[in-house]
Image (spheres, rainbow, N blue to C red):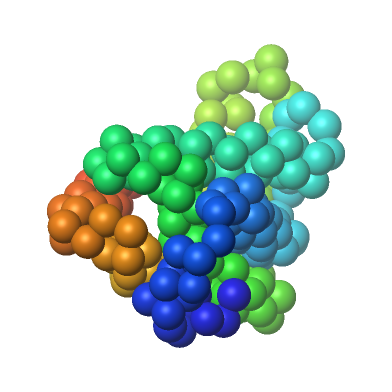
Length: 201
């Protein structure tokens, strides 16, 4: 993995000599998602659990498994539409998430050292919808105001730019004329998602 992180062009040049291995790159997406989710859980360890349907760790695992597969599938499909690379597009899409593994480990350390601190009462029962909604707003506000969230935002920005570099290297090796277009669209979508999350608060 170090080669794709530090020398992505060299990594993908070597990949040209073998058949595509998209499922290996999917494991990168899954690992990055698991580490990030574990960091979030660890950071919120002193807060009352907001889950309503059972152990939060179980739902975390299910959510990451399904979410990472959907994310990888959509990203790979869009990359295939833009480049016509087929399985190779899914392989490149997966490796784009490699920085998330490294930065996720940093975030995990931050979560261990600086948990979210807030005094919240236990969540009300699901039958009290209005009270539960207010409680969730308080929970989300406490998490957003934490040092963990501030560091997470900066690490996400680094991860997007790092991933864009890997994406550019991969597409340039296999479909050189499409590399600039693909990365431009990738960065535009990331910027749009950031703005939506910012104004959706």
